[in-house]
Image (cartoon, rainbow, N blue to C red; front, side, top):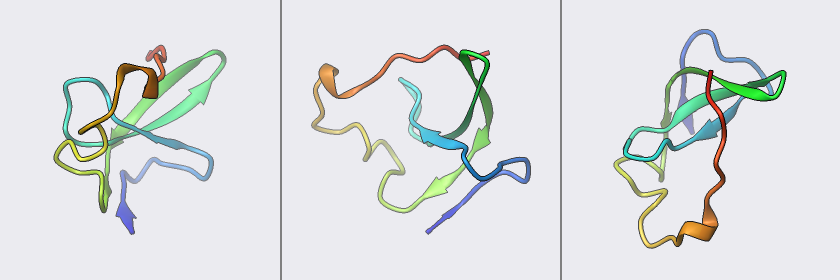
Length: 64
């Protein structure tokens, strides 16, 4: 179960940006990602998505 910004579309992704505790809706466009807005996703709020994970578990993406 989750909630997101009005502008999100089918195919958008959810990501946790380093240093943030709230997941974000991201859209891939022409080789980069666009930040659409904050969202609520049960089970990954308040840093739960990144606790006890190693550096190798994450991907670096470019935001525009």
